[in-house]
Every structure is written in structure tokens, then in C-alpha cells.
Length: 152
Image (cartoon, rainbow, N blue to C red; front, side, top):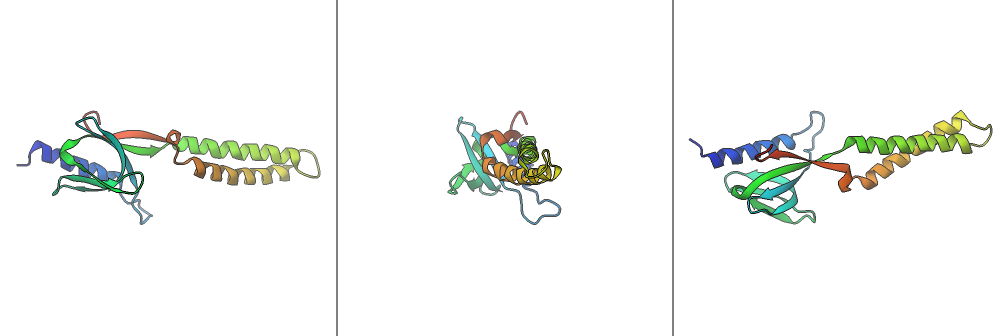
């Protein structure tokens, strides 16, 4: 019969497997950025690559790409970094509407030109995509959701 600690390690491995599951129509696995809290109070971020149940290690890469390992018996809780999609959508919509408004006002020809609005909206859409890409790694664009630990 497996011990309680072994069952907890398997629970963590299963949670990591679910979080990095392959999307139905895509070949790549999702990268799992996680914040790991150890039982001695240390807190750190890492990209989780694997849970080695035989070796008792949580393996991954730190923010600079250096390999890092955490002993499974010392892991207290793990949070997953999840994107806040609503904030990205707001950036896109505000840039699109601003571009449409600017296009209507500054279009050559007739004042309040609908063609200028459409062209401005397309320009704003592209600018919104660029802006979303530039701010995607900011802390405000993500939330931390606990998926392993006592309060999960």
C-alpha cells in the first residue's frame, strides 16, 4: 500500500500532467509556469518540465533558463500562472476603437468618412495586437491559481 507522501507526490504529478496537457488540435504542450512554495517557506518561480516520482524531484527551468530541481518532499503548494484574457481583449478593443475614431476624424475627403473609420480600425487592431504582445509578460496580465497544496 502506498504511503501518504507517495500519494501526494502522485497527485502533484497528475496535476502537472493535466496543466500541460496537449490541446486537441495542437501538437505542442502548454508551458507550465509555476510558483512553488516549499515547507521551509522558500518561494520561487519556475517552468515545470517534469515530475520525477522515482527520484522524488520536481524538475524545471528558472526565469533565466538554468535547470532547477526541487525535492518533492519539500513542496508545500504550487500555483499555476494563468493569463488574464479579459485584459488582453480590453487592450485590443480600446486600440481598435481609438483607431476607428481617429480614422473617422482625420480621413482625407469627406468629414466623418466611414472608409477612414474602417482603415483606422484595422490599424488599431494591428496596433492592439502589437501592444498585447509587448505587455504579455507583465505581472498584471497574469493571475496565480493554486493547483496543488492544502487549500487547492
